[in-house]
Length: 196
Image (cartoon, rainbow, N blue to C red; front, side):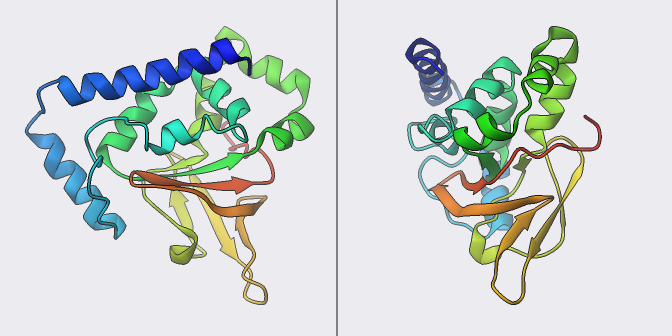
């Protein structure tokens, strides 16, 4: 992703955070954020439920290792959806690194996803990478979890070596990014839900 696109994405995220900090709070947001923190087992403190700030898990997607995924999120028009999800509760993002996307994402499939008529497919694919709950590696359990796409994703951990998997992808960097509003696990490849 080029510097102008990255800069625009950073600007949008920071602008959204500034707007959230200056806008009057709705009475239901603090309790929803507190409930999300309580149910996720975290006491995230400052920044939880207050919108996007520079310490957000969404801003961390702009890290040089995840810029391809951040670009897809922007093209899928999902920034507001993800900001809303982070505002309501902590999130877990399964993020393939740039080199994994470049290596494994077929150019024809990428072109297909980026066509305007396939916006819903791109959104479903990307939201399949996000759980509406904080799930650091220490809390990993081998069960099915709902994603923001509405589909379930299977998590697994090998008993003999503790290797973690999400669907068909190995978790190569557990807890790659930890923020007050969520966690990013680096995975070896893009997850493709059945609906896509």
